[in-house]
Image 1 (tube, rainbow, N blue to C red):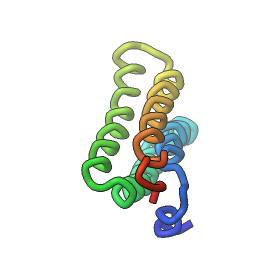
Image 2: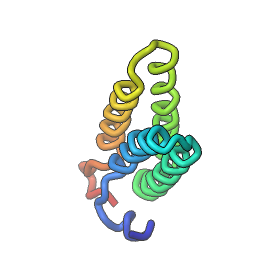
Image 3: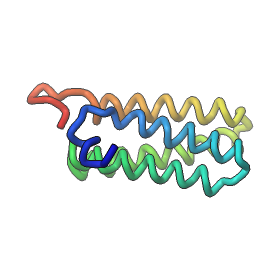
Length: 115
């Protein structure tokens, strides 16, 4: 599916956030190649960013991008700094980031539909 098709549809960007965080971690852990997981994280974030920018404008796109990267960092802090299970940390930040993203970027606004 092309980026233009994603923007025209009501494809939820929250799915891309969840894929980027959870699948990115799973691929990095499963393959032992951190860069591969990082590539999944970056690609999903870029695709979500395009949707945010076109649907909600630059301010919202920047805020959600900060949330996405912040969730990635927080998962590391929870797992390494606090000692939480890595999968639990990733699951918690993924649920939070995807939930906020859905509420901010993927739900219809009172003035009209989502892009």
